[in-house]
Length: 60
Picture (spheres, rainbow, N blue to C red):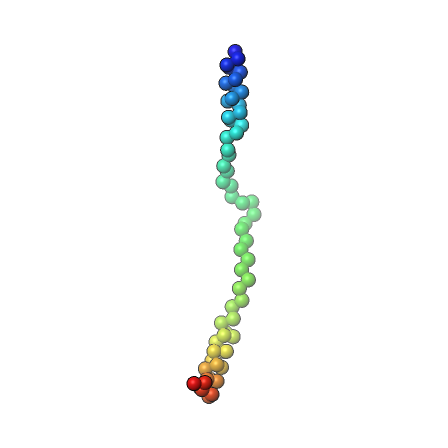
């Protein structure tokens, strides 16, 4: 009887200590906030102005 109690106790301890891994989907959607400012038009104007300045006043 003593061995049965030890075995039952050991079994309960082993079952209680088993790790649980759960893969669950998040409840709310994932939000990625990208603060990107597109200023291609401004850059194009600056590049054109710089090319005109270099042509009119050569540096080298």
